[in-house]
Length: 230
Length: 240
Ligand SMILES: Nc1ncnc2c1ncn2[C@@H]1O[C@H](COP(=O)(O)OP(=O)(O)O)[C@@H](O)[C@H]1O
Ligand SMILES: [Mg+2]
Image 1 (cartoon, rainbow over the protein chains, first blue to last red):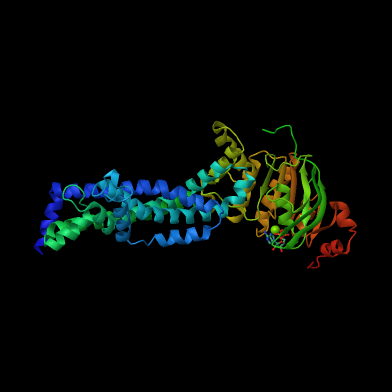
Image 2: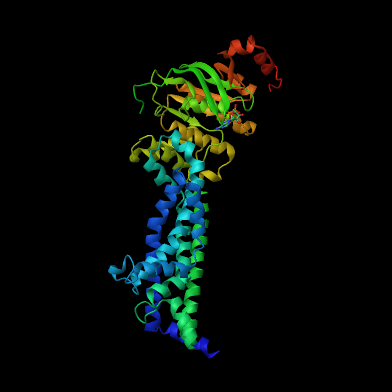
């Protein structure tokens, strides 16, 4: 397969177009993880630690949103950001920022749902001890987040994996503009349809490598957590 | 640091506790004073754990009232509890003790040395760096004791501290309890083990079906029980 050879050549030669695409993908997905984490972890912790009417429904919806189809998220964010949409005046459509927004919407529920589970399990285990030690509300939250840190980072990695691999949302709100909003996944889709297999395969390999590294990191964290904290 | 205010005596006046429509504790009146350990005995399901949680202030009575040194505030600054199955924080053994010290307001600079001393007191020397959750049942129980002692309580509540431990581990725990009691801390503990009650109690409270059946000095209780239930319990019959 000559395609393989040229894909490898592209990778090894550090092809600038390819590197730019990889870079943008990482920036978008990592930003989405940061924002998704800033929203998802506190939200998940809040749901875990409070009782309010409709809480069960919130949990069911949160869990359901984990399986949200990226294209639907893309469509919703598109409608929000399009010129005639409620946030149209921000002029974000077809920019990397729009892609970050879409991926944040996509993965915040994943992070929130996993964080909720983590914090709630830990809380049911810790609550009597922390009450007996007279630990205040802020101290409790800090303790639960710190002691659940390995699981919480795993949740962030799960969010990153989903963001990095999805194509629907970034395609719709980013527009796959060459050199501006083209990510690994949208480039692969485009190049494959054009028949330019070396670039598509090269990007595919990078994407697989990233997914492998993320999963290895999640695995390593879990092991480290067990070793350090039991 | 021990504040001048005291939690003792703890007075339960006509205290009842119900949950889910079931009366778990039924009109209990009890006074816990400073001195030798008070041991709550009674079969499983008698209400011992619920009673300890009330005394700790973790739950509020549905009827009657509990006062600590005459005060009704429930903040557990001067009392500590070791639960029957203590939860181990996901930290090292020493980390667990340091956490309790921090919660008790001990300045950071003094925590490490203090944690080491508390670990030694309960016989955990050499295990400080082990993850708490990897310790054996008896070691976890002793770690929970060290954690409870971190706030220098006036009152230490222990819920079946030796249940499910083998004789060696039981002896280790009982030795620490004796040391603690000798240091002037009031110990209130539960057990369904008659032998343990005899070994440790200065005062006995027999709980059965949510009521205090009989209470008094341990010597009197074992030598001249007043109630049928107490006589049967001491004779080793099953109270059901
Ligand atoms: N929160 C609760 N809701 C309903 N029943 C409870 C609750 N807590 C305890 N019980 C019941 O109250 C009884 C006494 O429990 P407990 O205090 O744990 O007894 P002991 O510690 O003597 O074994 C048991 O029958 C138990 O099932
Ligand atoms: Mg019990």
